Figure (spheres, helix red, strand yellow):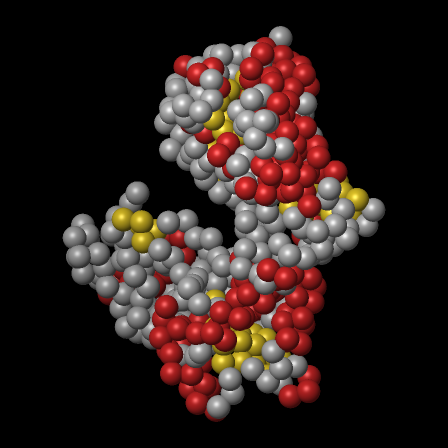
Length: 503
């Protein structure tokens, strides 16, 4: 990484690149230990001139713009007469002056279609007409004061960003300079209009509005916005289809390269899938779980530094996040040498039967909990049949009532999916886990069985085996659709699929 840039944005670096703002002449300060000293007047003059006009004109709105507008209308209807502030979030430092890759808040993305850091969506009450929405965004870099080539966030360092005029055309919202946001919002908040903010993303804005905010009301806003994502529109469903299609390719890549993973480690699998995620989308939607052998019994094994040994199983839980930030979430448990042994197949087939029962329970009008209960019942039946639970003391009903199967099933059987891998996580229980399924909801069905290496309650041959099968299921008008059906699930189909890569 090259040096001699500043780690922080320039002070007051507004410039004429956006709407004729007056350019400040305050110079940008360089890195303390940078190799260059003072900037000569001649160099400064040279850097100010000789640049082509790169403004993009005749831009069309992004695909999600009309859908985002409809979501904003629903938000407006829920909070008449209140000012609403929805930040995208800020960059977070990874080390010294390097940042983690930015991922905007899902609430902000859902309502705007935008993905830029430091941005803010504001809804101002507009009488009976609802709200007037506008964005605060960072304009193009100033070329007059040197920000564009000297500042750490200047465009020659991090790339071109849209002008405010371009952003307005793309997103269908008026845009202002975000460097004025805190001051303008704090001043506006003195008018007595109730104000809410989505907390946890922009500490500066929260501090600027601290005197007028109410934590309880802010939490209510976050809950509402989480619930707003429960039913996906047609555009979102298309994004999730794309995410699943790319994820199928990523799993195919991983199986094709299992030989290299055996020669190296789980990290080969992680890197292989990540490459596909970056080529087909934005990134992985969550840390990939590439768990070989006994690591498969750790639910969120993301260290991915273990050996990949023929004769054992690989539990791969991974999902591609699209460029619009919708993610798939798929799991397959694969025999590393291409063939299940007898015990592995028995356990795998039990999990498959549980998943089949869970998927069959996904339909409009069914309770959200039905697919979980259906899967857990099947797993409990197998645990009793194998003698791991005492059938002389318990029947299936009692096992479920007491939750005894959870020693080996551990987790719930699924969750909502969308912009977040665990989407709608803070929505109201009565519209989520205690509600009925509706067409347009997308959820995972992912039963599993996990026998820990140190579990003395099961025969030794079970210990260290973990199996999970997970697919992304769309609730349709007449049932459901498996969006990730491009990957085989049945044990014999998995073996046949894997054999095709070794032929």
